[in-house]
Image (cartoon, rainbow, N blue to C red; front, top):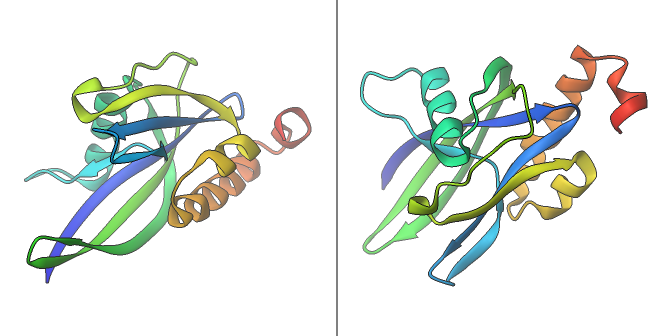
Length: 147
């Protein structure tokens, strides 16, 4: 069994959530949150910020830690146990640019309910819900405007 650690961000601007659409040679399609592998000598926060910048072209700031998700997947001859550490982030605009080299073809900000239903993986839906609740607590008046 192999272990892997990634970090990612739930980026929110004006109540809307950043999502990426990935299509890997037509074998995998779906909406996801930006995340990626921790590099040597890198903190979890640095990884999350770098991955959001690389995958979505968004310069974000970390507001707080949301939690971690865990899952496993198979690769030829092995099983990978993966843990992903998530951060609530904010940005200054709706601008984004998907990283084509990583097979991201669309990116954008969506209302919470849209983002929740677009996300492909249940563990990312759970993290989105947790992050959005933290966002609402941080911005008590946001609920009336954006929800």
